[in-house]
Length: 153
Length: 412
Image 1 (cartoon, helix red, strand yellow):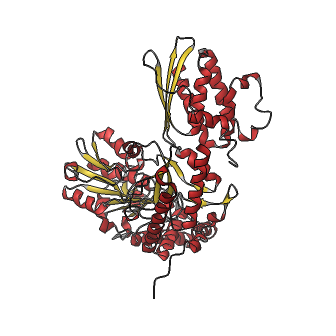
Image 2 (cartoon, rainbow over the protein chains, first blue to last red):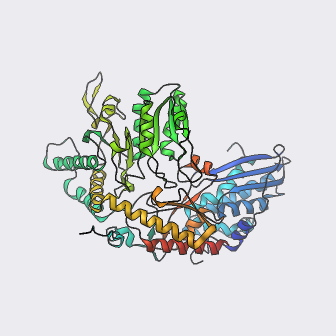
Image 3 (cartoon, chains in turn green, orange):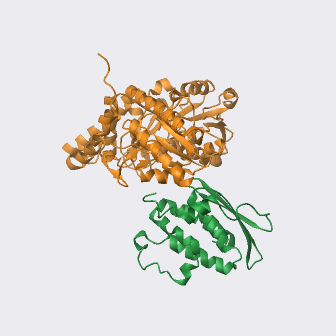
């Protein structure tokens, strides 16, 4: 679709149509946190099971748009089996990508460095920053996941 | 001679914004329930105010201050006529309808309601007619009761007598902003008055689109916003029965709302100024006056007729084109609803629909429309909402339908 290619990339539509790691986990031992986007009413539930060191399992339930669903799905796929420290690093990287200014998108301000590559498919969400209203959709699952692994925040 | 035919094409030309393009396409503005566009007369008059008569009102005894005061007070008189109020003193200028409702919550309600009293709300209310009452409820331990709805978004009044038992305040929207439902306000205010309750009508979605008569509605308070009726943002109106307003304590304290201040205390001004502390939004009030005249010139009856016809056309076109793939929420008949068309299309999220529509220049609202309790009752997370006004016509609806179709292709 003209104009929307940056937003609705194929990989995003794929995760939206076939979301990974959907569902629930028994609480406890898993931890569940809910996130809301007050602007549009989107809701997400994130279930995380850890052994205190590694993310052993993660499940997502999203009532939301393609961007929030795809972002949460890609996040779940990426953080599974990662250590909490690695997950924290990924959250930071993702949030940094989402806070980049549109004008910096194509410049060298966002380096294609090794850290950035850690985000893998999630880089497809870079185009979201051109649509400021949708940034909250993209970060909904991440902020909720962040609450689970760092509840003090 | 027959009445002149309503010509949206001609009306469109009064609105400069509707000449612009979005993403290379002519704009199709279908979000008037959120805010309406402004006719050139309103824009020009506000600019002229600043260029020619800008001065503070009710203070200076010089020429331009008198002109500014006169023009501001002329708007009060226009609004009074427009809603058939019995006195200009009953017209209080606020920031918007939300502030108007809060004014009632902080003055009338906090001086009249106590623990154990009951406030009755409809399930269709906007957050602005819910949250001020929840704030009061938690402060005073006041019960909030809800009038239920049918699946088609009309109020279920079968148990209304029971619901009204012990009620001191009924808060009801004249028209639902989320579904377009026209509520039977008169029937409700009659029933509420029988039990001695006071009735506040949220008229945000009715005053811009229907002839309004506060006496006929049986309201005690009525709130609406200027920006949804061709006026500027930052100006709203609270109408209240004079008898009630006179007994109410002031709202915000400051200049303009006093008759006298000593080191010991103050004497409040008369209504309506008692409730208008500080320098008012003068340009906005003047702009609202021009908007009222603009709507009166077209005629509120003609406006309603046009909107009902266009709503009917839209419902038919969308149903024919998309069949069961598209669900229109709210009452089935165009005569039971305003020009608000809330819909779901397949399982495509409204955010995604509105994003695709934007590519075709089509502006619709997506989300819960500040009506979360209603959406929860209907089992919906969000809807897309197209809302019509005087400047919309059939061609806008055709563009909308084509754009919805494109959204379907992208997400199929």
